[in-house]
Image (cartoon, rainbow, N blue to C red):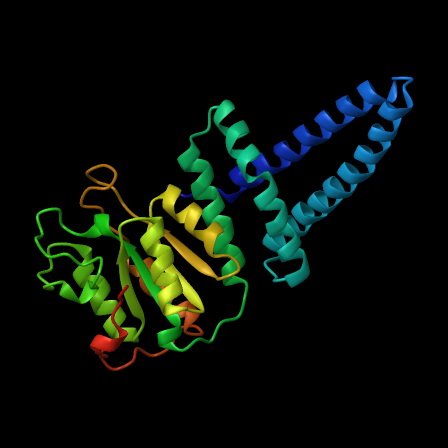
Length: 267
């Protein structure tokens, strides 16, 4: 099902309108008091909040312009991302109150993030790209631990980890498998990539994208035919397209590459 970017953006606009309404209500209550202290507080708060609201509004307007014209405008993009970070918790809360699922709102956020990333120009070396996958892609009956060393995988083909190994080898990118956000952040810190292709659920992708900014992340939602965190799957075509994008477009696949033990993840 196609994920609509306008869902998250609509929640951002609604959040900004809610803040403006609270601001006007607070101004009305304080401005009508005769006490000088209240008047000083009202003026000080009004100036500060007006500045924040103005910057947030410009950021959202710039973000809308970038998405509409499909053109990267660095200053407006940075301002827009600041507005997103500010309004994100409120947007999630209001969206839930209005009956939208948190997963749908987060999926919409991921789509916006991916479009913003794809409006930038990248021509990276393969080793500058990290392919980060969740542990739930591994077959649950597998006895081999791959989160510390992904090359402990026996490549039996019973789960998508084998196909991800094939893609990592084909394009020469690094591959890591994480059990959660802490280990994922460890791999990002360990490899210091210039871009990440991340596979995860809505919750983990959203937090990962926010935690690693300004590092560009292309997020790919996993597929859950058996429910969350159990034998999940992934659209391999989307993964390959994301890798090729960071390589600077449809770059020819590199010869099969091996990774030396020194380059494997470690603590």
